[in-house]
Image (cartoon, rainbow, N blue to C red; front, side, top):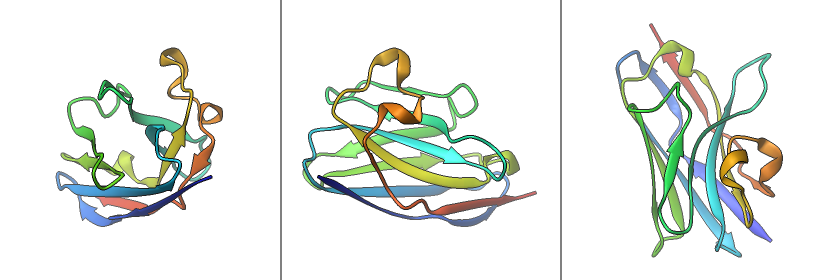
Length: 123
């Protein structure tokens, strides 16, 4: 069993930055991803980082967001820069032992989820 505890959400003006953290406990040898869900929309993949450090991003955040991990702390981060109002959503950390490269953005590829901090970006 893996437990994921997120922190770092909040409100910021457009152009600002926020950093989300996701601390994992239990079985931590997982592929880690970040998702977001806005009201009335499906949960969508934002970024993923694999065990070897390879990472990929959704087109909408590429160049603005950075996913990273600290294996000594079992923590994954999402640094969000140049935030836009359309980035407003609940953000969820996710973990899974087997996430295929071509399915990393699908929520059903992951087994464990965090509780989801809110990120609000005002114009």
